[in-house]
Length: 170
Image 1 (tube, rainbow, N blue to C red):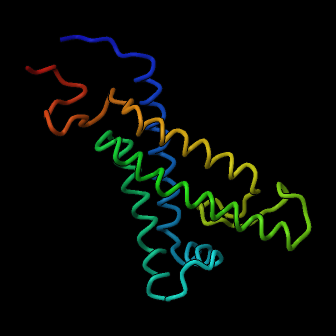
Image 2 (cartoon, helix red, strand yellow):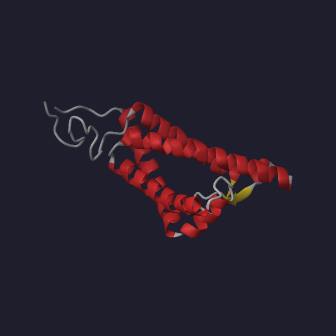
Image 3 (tube, rainbow, N blue to C red):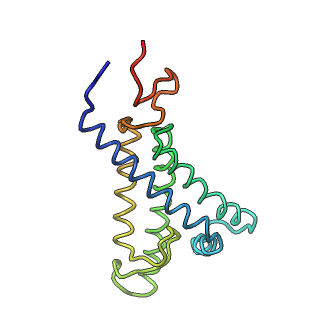
């Protein structure tokens, strides 16, 4: 059965690929330099136990890589989108909170705050970083909520076992 693909499905595909590529690349940057990521995580002062801090610094980048691969290939897209949302929301709040503290202590405009937030890009200005995280979060929520982005998915329906690029079955 031949069906046309809607604009919303194509938008979902673009968002899925963009999210996946972004998470994959940022996860790999952090994974290749876990010491730098460890230093960035330490600045948030959330975890004091060294073993837990090391575990976070090792596990989070590889979780991002794994989620990125799932999004790019189109496997478990909705669940992965919700997992990315669950990672992006608290991270965005932590970055905002840390920037707010820096802004107050340095007595500079909020958008002039610049620090290594741990995202894998080095030092960044806070306002563009927060805007970027909000766009990524909105994309993840949209993909998770709508389930769009099935074109060219490796596997979109694990229950029925149909492939997105393959022929429709019974």
